[in-house]
Image (cartoon, rainbow over all chains, first blue to last red; front, side, top):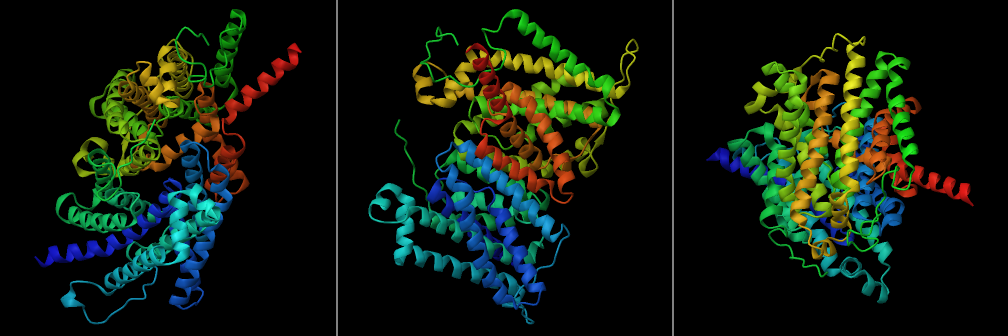
Length: 290
Length: 341
């Protein structure tokens, strides 16, 4: 029973990571209806930047917030430079641009920082076992950070004027423009925020899976699964979906399929959600008029 | 294009292959003859290693052609065609190394298996449009190496170690080395499949595929069975890419799970975009592009061919969205106009 409880708690901890990346995906999807295939690579690059700062002697938390800032700028720049010109192009072009982005960022990361696996520090250490050894300090810290980030994002979108403007720009760009919202700026901000959230997820997961240029590929897949499970147009749903997928993955890994088929579990979740309930658990069913 | 199909003009007016009706017969034969000479010349010109590279380029071209059928002509975005490539390669490898089949007999089996798998993937794909399909096939491609390594199939696939196989020997009456022979085999099979695909695309089915892509509602109103068309397009596409996989298995004489990562699928996608989306000739350019551009990129910067690859991809999407085939088409059109006026 202890084993089961531990698996579930560990699942919630990794689920938090998936939830953050899923949230980043949903933020971009809501604003532009694009699925950002390069989200994982962007997060990996951010994590490498944090790693570089920490190894240069910058204290962890300063490096943490500096990385978030840098990632925000990178995200906003990517939107401005690469996505804006193809705004109205067909989906194939978007997928192509995202794949190109994935190649560029992924390989640039390996080029600049090297392909060797690196140890990433965790700020959460504890000498005494917590809750009778049920949860590690890092798991607890990760979950706390994730929850704080999710709460902040929620408050930002729900209670600030800027958040309202971003929601308006995503929901109905034309009307938003008519009431004086700078829609282009909102899109860039959305990308920046998504990149920042992804960066946090990367820094939280790196101590567990170790840092290398392909670190986020599997995580991205789980985040896709979580976002789809919760409903890709519903941020709250995507977060819940991320947590659910984390627990599901851990339980399936421990009791059903073993660790070798973990990625296949993500594939199966994705396919079953899309087949059984394409809108996700909490998503809106979209009817298109022809 | 004949208007006897009953399709409204513009619906199926997608880019068509170069040798279109209106070209005199002798010109077309000249093109074919030129093509054959161009295809055979490397046998005498190139030494072993470069011939092998060219063989691989033709194989990649064939795989890109398969992707083009479903993504280019039918508009279903697949980022997972590497999976079919892997299925084809493993079909041939398993039959050759476990059952001592000759290479030739593995081809129909591999074609049938890949078409079946493609048909099976085509069903869930029906309910997924655009980005969702790209996402699902992306997930499929990411999962492929894991599936191949799994214990349940390890005895067949050879697990992480993979499988070794040998090239078929050239027939006694031909004075060619095994490398030259495999090049001949690959080029002939590719030529046949390119011709068949060209035939398929310029006919009724091809127009139906493009109509489904450009305006599904109108196509359905014209009486086209969209579901059947889309799943069959997936099956044919998987078949072509699968055969390319089979050929790659014998050309390399080795298959292993880690040669079929997501980057195979991405490479095919890049090849399609670079060569020209929805273009038969473009697929050929695409194959050459994905094989030779990374080499060139490597000579510019040893460390990061991938970066340059990505930059080229995005650059092409921005300035030349119809790929090399589109560029060629525009150039020839300009030449013709210049010639007549």
